[in-house]
Amino acid sequence: MHRMSKHGRRSMTVTAGPKIRQGEGFAIDVSVMGSGGELGVGIDLSKARVPDRRYAADVCALARVHGTVKMMFGQERVDGQGWRSLLVIEMSESSASQLVESMSEMKNPTLDEIAQAASLNAEELSAKASEPGHPNQAIALSANLALVAVSANEACIDFYHASPFAMGVARVARKLAVDPVVRVDLRSTLLLGLLISLRGLDLPRVPRMKLGVD
Image 1 (tube, rainbow, N blue to C red):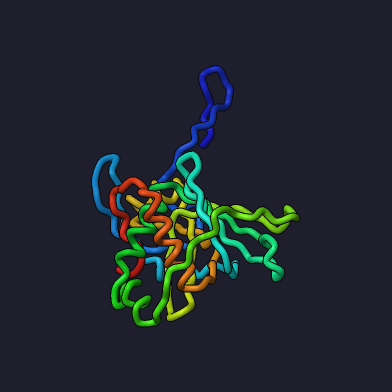
Image 2: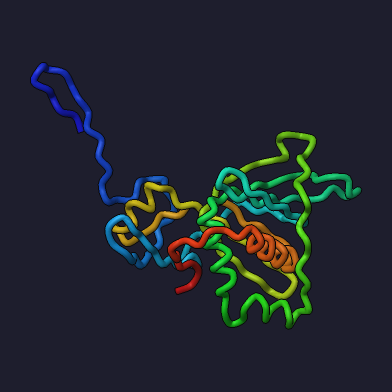
């Protein structure tokens, strides 16, 4: 919005209204809880658009750097000498903590029940990621939401991102714009190992954000 000052010069006032900005992502309904500066949301990510990008991971490593959790998914070279490609998913500690909580609360069946029924043993993650020799074979993406599915030996994680703009509008609009980031396909045993390693980071507990199917 432009305004004319008393000196005849134009000034610009920038305001953010309670609307989802074009390009923020796919809008899904949310239930908003809390008041004042505290905002809690219940999100049914099953209604979000499935990510177009796919990545098949057969190895995984984990790092905690500067308040960020880096989940490093890779594809091993066929000769076993390093990684052919690398996908780094960066999540804040609070988002990673919420991911751990949501996976731990899976029901009908739980992750433990699936593992027991399919005789699955969690894999140990790689001690460290192997940076591919070609820079074009490595990519880093940001996410703060994730939806997990397991079927016997196969699992996948759909990663999403909701920007601070989208989070701020959710209180009023009762909708959250989420941007589909990537789907990672992996073995169920590797997913179990990832969950155990995330728990081992002893991430700080945060106000609960309900994820998954309401």
